[in-house]
Image 1 (cartoon, rainbow, N blue to C red):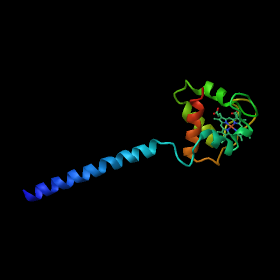
Image 2: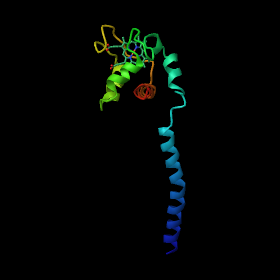
Image 3: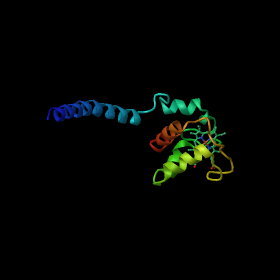
Image 4: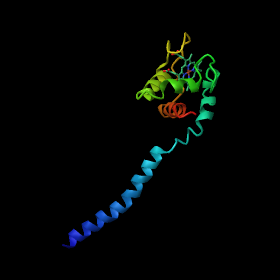
Length: 119
Ligand code: HEC
């Protein structure tokens, strides 16, 4: 019996400690990656703005136009991730976008989510 109570105590203590740890982990995963910070700045730092403007077509389509084309596609996010990381051609014109391999996957995802949420 004593052993049982001892074990029960251990489980209780463990679960009290484990729960907040799990929550913190979840929050950390959901929170914007601190190395990314503001996505708009990231897009500037990564030189996307050499070819993309928010609203005007430059060499590449504007971010608003990209959003317009993909916002209602359920697989839009995956398509854009693929275009960004593996390169894109023939979807918007004759200019090719080479794979943006100076982006981590997390950064690419943050940028795509940001584009799709533009107003
Ligand atoms: C050298 C110019 C250039 C740079 C730099 C560039 N892009 Fe592009 N981007 C393009 C062009 C051109 C297209 C259109 C390609 C096509 O017609 O398929 C494009 C297309 C895209 C698309 C749409 C892809 C699709 O599947 O429809 C996204 C999203 C995008 N760019 C994001 C970015 C981001 C984010 C960066 C910075 C990390 C970036 N681009 C940097 C030229 C560029």
